[in-house]
Every structure is written in C-alpha cells, then in structure tokens.
Length: 217
Image 1 (cartoon, rainbow, N blue to C red):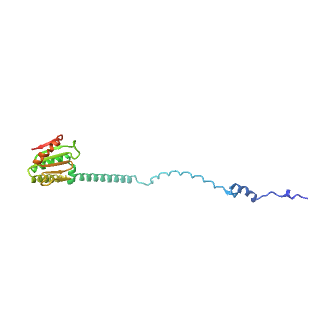
Image 2 (cartoon, rainbow, N blue to C red; image 1 turned 135 degrees about the vertical axis):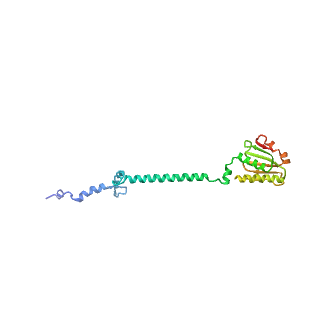
Image 3 (cartoon, rainbow, N blue to C red; image 1 turned 30 degrees about the horizontal axis):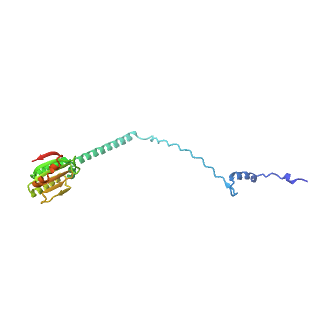
C-alpha cells in the first residue's frame, strides 16, 4: 500500500512564490489587519547645471553695436545738459515776496524797522538786543511820537515798509488813545510811546542789561 502523504508533491508555481512577496509588502498592526508598507521616497532630482551664456550670433556687426553705444552716450549727455540749464534758469527766477522776507535776519528786520520809524519822524529811536535776556524776541525797537496821530502813523509806516520786504507782523496792540502802540514781528518787538508814557514806564531802564545796538536822537 502506497503512502499518499509522502507522494504529495510540494506546492509549485506562482501561488507558492506570491506568499513571501505579500508578506514583505505588508506590516502587522494592532487590530490584526495587514497594512501596506509606505512607498519608498523618490530619490532627489539632481540640480540643474547653470545655462551657459548665449554667445552673440556669428553674423553680428561690431560696427553697428558701437554706433548704438555712441548714440546712447550722446543722448545721456544731452539730457544732462538740459537738466543743468533748467537748474540755472530756476536759480535766476526772482524770489517771491515771502521768500525774500524769510531770508532776512532778525537784525536786518530790526534795522529796517528803525529806518521806517525814522522816515515817520519818530523821536529817540533805540535798538536793543535782548536775545540773551528773554525768549520772547531778539530785538526791541523803542521810539516816541509827539501825538496820538503820529503814533498811529509810525506804526502804519513800519508795517507797510516791512510788508514790502515780505515781513508781516504777527500782532499789534494799542489804539489811538492808549499812548503806547506795540507791533510784534516775532523776532523784533516795536514799542511806540507818547513821551509822558515813555518817561513813566522807563522801558530802557527795565532792560538796562540789554545791549544797545544803535540810538537815533
């Protein structure tokens, strides 16, 4: 009697070889179900080599290229010359009245005020420098008038004269009956007194430490 178990042939063919491959492609998991292995990452791409500069075409004309360079240089030179001429023309333009006023120094403004007061026959004109004693102004101009009408005329004459120079007052105090008119130009303050009021307030004595720049009797 023949033993059938010994004669059973070993499994061959594709079915027997598939098992190991399937086991290699799966991984065990906690729930007992097979899991596929993650796919292997692709190898990084090699860096591309930099492109070589394109060579000028063999038929390029060097004379034409040189002419273009010369034309560009000439155009740039013309533009620079036009810009220079425009800047010179702008410098030659007359200044506006306000711009002229901004160019005046406080001392120049004060001297113009003295000249305007003198034109209106103001008496005993004194210019004091007070910049080291107070921050309210750099200079005081003190003068006297013989009447209320003359006080107003002196104040108006100073205002008109400075307006022609591009300088305007920022304030004016005192009317026709106040006997004391003050015109404030910011850096210069003008005090126009009637004679009795000037003797009474003695402004020069109060600012005795100020430097006297000039006095016109």
